[in-house]
Image 1 (cartoon, one colour):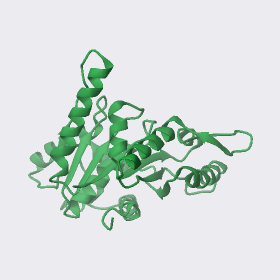
Image 2 (cartoon, helix red, strand yellow):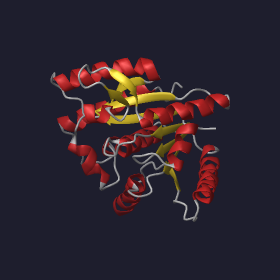
Image 3 (cartoon, rainbow, N blue to C red):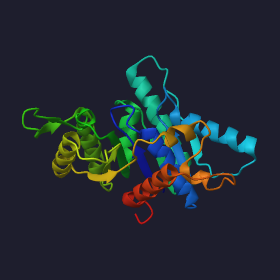
Image 4 (cartoon, helix red, strand yellow):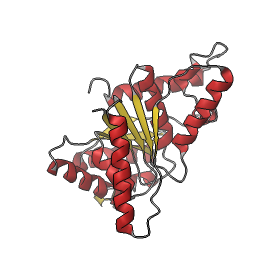
Amino acid sequence: MGKIIVFGNEKGGSGKSTTAIHVAISLCYLNKNVGIIDLDIRQRSMSRFLENRDAFCKKQSLNLPRPKFYRIDQSNKDSKAESNLEEEKTFAEALTTLEQSCDFLVIDCPGGISNYVKMAHTVADILITPMNDSLIDFDLLAKIDTSTGKVVGPSIYSEMVWECRQVRASAKHPPIDWVILRNRISHVFSKNKYQVGKSLNNLSKRIGFRLSTGFSERVIFKELFLSGLTLLDLEKMDDWQPTLSHISARQEMRMLLASLNLISA
């Protein structure tokens, strides 16, 4: 059975799909069999990335590594009970299909909480929650006292993660390794950066997660999406001339993968 990596956050625009894409392709380059489930039914960012990748490889006659993909659709049943039952069956079929042949299964969740999202978080061996390094994004993890900056309680999303952990514990499954990924961290000192870092360190001890540094704000990640490429793919291009930005971004990716402890786990 493969290890399940879930990318989730209640907020959109935090870098979930971008990070999930790069982690999945990085694992492929490490000769791992990788499967992908795209639960973001509305935006389908992961699905469109793979479509762009197939089109680019066909046009350029390239043979780049590609994860296995399982498409999941939203239930159209009339009642919520019937809809939930159908989605549970669909999700279970996806897991069964991919787990048997994959070393890693990457699940990209949409912003918000849904039946699919809850199921994904419950089966997660590793939960990666990217967040922009701001107090706005921190508010989706916990409620803070604006006058003191102290954490006063968990958010709806954190409570959902706690509930999923309880379900896993009752089924005697290993605990979720929850990783909060700080994206777009400023390279200069600021009050916001200090406050977010301090609050995250305090919160990690209360609700049980570990911290990792993600990606800086780099245009290159967005540019590559249209071709279905990652930074690691560029090394395979004969005419590629790396810039300092490329090299820095690639190093960020390698440091991220190392911090997740995916291979040694």
